[in-house]
Image: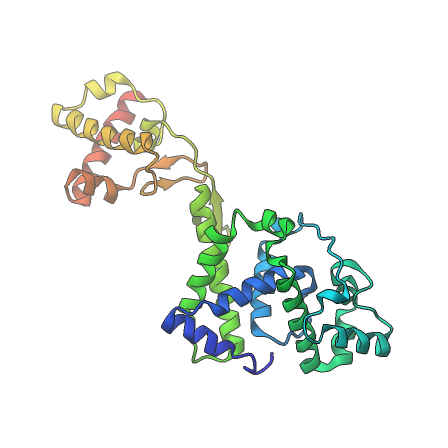
Length: 308
């Protein structure tokens, strides 16, 4: 990866110290600009491009539906874009304007980079970036439709988180690598938070840790408390008065949370059913967790014995 000629480290440091959002906007620009030109296995002249590539790959399902049909003409040349066109056409016989949306650059990316060299190639991509910005490509309906529902709620917050956490004393390669990993973790966390998905940690038959993703479903009160839908009424009547009162208070808490869809403090089984967290319910009751655990266990044992 290239040295810090693009002031990448400095831009990240300014974001952390002063809240300067330049690096975020640069990454967002490169996400929008011919996102399918950013490919694996190519060395890019700006560190922000590697992050933009990573993000676009991660959210690729959204972007695959975006179609582009923009034709570039000389009147839109920003600065030296026409110079690159002439040089590439003379040297390689490739006209970068021959296909809409710089299609020939996309198809011959490695060949053009090898011909121009890293410095001139950086200039070409920067010129393309400025061209799209000048034409208002950032507001292109196809791209905006593809990512509008996730950019502000997922992409930008995850990027802010990743950039704020990275150690800017590390090398540029390490900064990019960390930002990509941190972005992915936070993006997934935010995504799960939005749709209610829970990530459960489990171990397979070989003892290796694995993540299981579960979509919680509406769960009946008794299953949340005891893990079963059916509780014999006679079993509840047979409880001591203090136990019935205790169970009623627990039931009121669970049903109140369920009615308000306030289930973030509840566990979720692999089957998608909610279960109580002893510590949470104990806190709501104002008692020690150990006291709650002992009391609810005794009640559950009596109910199972009576129901069996």
